Length: 206
Image 1 (cartoon, rainbow, N blue to C red):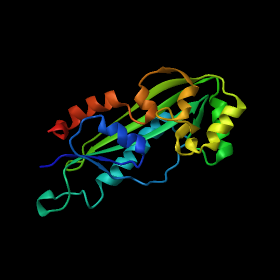
Image 2 (image 1 turned 90 degrees about the vertical axis):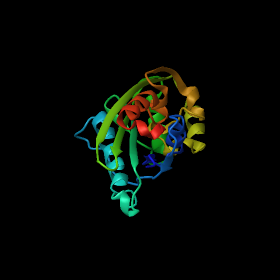
Image 3 (image 1 turned 60 degrees about the vertical axis):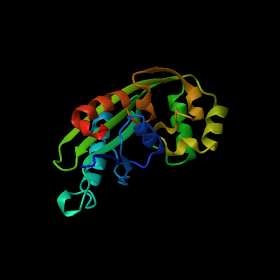
Image 4 (image 1 turned 30 degrees about the horizontal axis):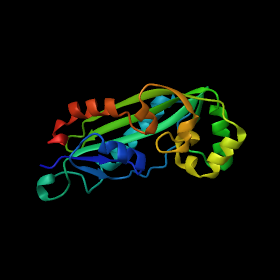
């Protein structure tokens, strides 16, 4: 039986990272859910919850649901993920407009913030689940108003939590220090995810 890793995300950054895992068969199945952060939950709790919801939405899709023996469904694991940025008690999601992006970058300027990524795995046939959260601290140097405005004008920050990117993006020059998994800031904690997947479903590599 073919074992496929289904990525419940339309993020090109996550798609690129998943390829680094060495899994033989990867399928992109975006979970286009519009769910807001719950103010009663911590950033870590929120990203784990949202990752679970994304993974479940794809795992329960009719095209993947068993019985496999009747020609319906395809065996494998669904991977859901969600990332957010938090600083001084405020959660920074994707900016709603340019002004919001400028505000976020000004808030991050010269300070340390935390990037949280929630990861959820679901085995399609049995509905086994595994989820976890990885946190990475990122420090910005002091940014000038012109730097912030020019970066926002490029459009790059608009689809990124915290209004910046670190991989193949000008936002990388803002970062002076990272404590934790670099790839977690990009969108997936690769080392921890690899170990978790190897334990959860080793047949993804066969």
